[in-house]
Length: 237
Image 1 (cartoon, rainbow, N blue to C red):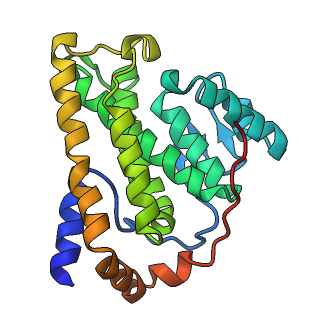
Image 2 (cartoon, rainbow, N blue to C red):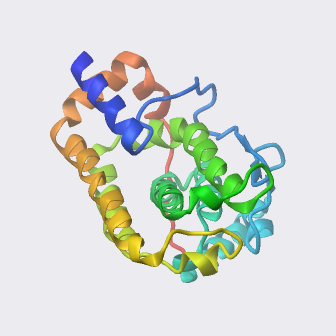
């Protein structure tokens, strides 16, 4: 079991957060603050054009916003995806939230890989702030989403395979993040292919070690905490 936990931690460092980084007191509500993009108190959302809809207390208005975002999927920034994942989770659309969260992680890591970090500037510059926002969202939101997601390893494997496939298509990053400076486009394909290929380790682990993962979750109390959470199916097209 210790070997499994070690393997999960290695994959965690390479890709996704598999274990809680900090205790989760209320698994039904993601309590995080990533300045200036999201504050669970309110909630307060500042990610651009979809902000008011994502923050709306009216569920129908929120779902209309999610539908609009789906239509513009290839142009979404990773902060938009992260915040949508959080709000979907809080409103009990948790399986859908898992897909948005893993898509956000991919795009956030893709941004970091293709960003020219030698020219990203420091505090206050777009590249610097976005890179650190990716790390913050990853660390703070992961314990909630993965606490839920790893309760269904078969479903999660399918999500990761979908995100891996979709991630091999590189969007027009310079249009999506107009004030960030990226590496030469000649380097994008190789860097992104390596990023996508690394996800195969997690997919294999989910398929081959599902029983061990379940036992580990039970021993750590994660299964009991997250297994009773409800899920509403998202029917928005």
